[in-house]
Length: 320
Image (tube, rainbow, N blue to C red; front, side):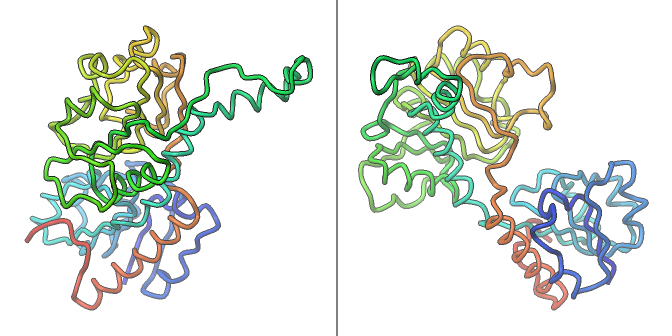
């Protein structure tokens, strides 16, 4: 069976081998594939693996041998699902591989705000501690997470994991989900409407999928409804935020700060307005990328392919 990995480098830069996939067929691996090269590289492929490469209707219609698309991620908005379904091509994703990794990153970002670790590490190495009269000093206010309200927008696997960690820190959790599921067994916790969550939360963490309805829903109006010292965290999708409005809110002190692992266009563009905004941390879409998470992703992908070959596909995202 002819199989092609279009953009494997981010999943396996050398520490997460494809050896189990290689046992299942003739595998060609490309670290990266320009969109213009997809057809050339996949013309005979029966299975395509993609992380961020976009498989459009035109591409899908031009691959007569294609039977299975394996998304090397949970989100599958890079695939024209309708076109795949019309061509009777099964599309599977990998749910549930990243919650521990992403939730951990959320708190890495939040703790950098609460304890100002990066700021003070740099200050010490610049000699500022050595010149102090006292045994300690701090350059910015420090605060405890205990007793603060964390608003979680989206209460799926990742959002619920973040909420559980927040509870362990003694935070009060407020969650918004279009279809609330059963409450967790810890307190304080409540489901609320989105507007109430935005008004009440000290920290807001986004964990919702990107849809047509919620694209850029974090805008000037929403930001103005937040507490003046609130912190906004986004490890979900960059397109959830109007970046010009967020930059303005940070520059005018409308909110206290922001921490982003995702932006609208990636890699981030040199003219992105957030790059010179104050009180913001930006990391390069790495929340998902621990070795443990990438290993789970690869193992689950192997199971997806094995199940497809056996005629019992799993994690199928299109409906026939």
